[in-house]
Structure formats: structure tokens, C-alpha cells
Image (cartoon, rainbow, N blue to C red; front, side, top):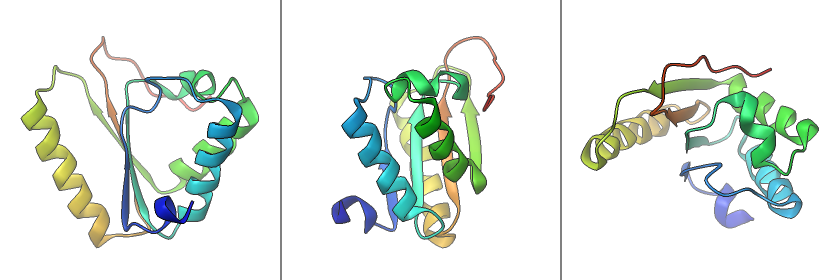
Length: 122
């Protein structure tokens, strides 16, 4: 676990692409909890917050606790138009530089390629 807790910036790409089992969800929660208010974390996903329990084995309690920690200092960036690889890379690099300057600031980066929907935590 120290391998994921130590970095100044941790990038978790495509959260929700594959479902996470109970053990994996518990491990990710522990990593986020250890990093909370200590180090920056970037997460990319195309799932709105309401869909996050499905990512974490339908564990609404764990999902709620995870979102509580993530969203406390989060900046949600919504990219709605089709994004090309170089464009995504430059956005990701800029956000990584920002989080290095502000280590307690967690940024949640969401790529969204469907019609505009509001991100909700409920």
C-alpha cells in the first residue's frame, strides 16, 4: 500500500471502466484515506457520482465515505466534447503541475462524452 500512498501526485485513470470487487474497493478506500489532506490525487472517469456505487461492488456506505474524502477539497473538471489524446495529455500535465504546487488539493477530473448531465453526489 505504501507504493500508492507515497507519491506526491497519484493518477487513477478510467475509474469505473471495470467494476472493483469488495477487496479492491476496500484497498482503494484505504489508499484515498491515507492520502486525504496529505497528497494530491487525480481521477479520470466517465461516470457521474450517482453511478459510483456500481463501481464499488454496490457498497453505498463505502462509496459515500470515499466521495466524502474526495470531494472535500475537490475540483471537478467536466470535459464534454470529444477529446483527442494530445489534448487529454496536456490537460493532465497541467493538472498534475497544479496539484504538485498545492499538495492538499485533490482534483477529480472527469471525461464526459455524452449529452450534458449534472454531476451529483446523491
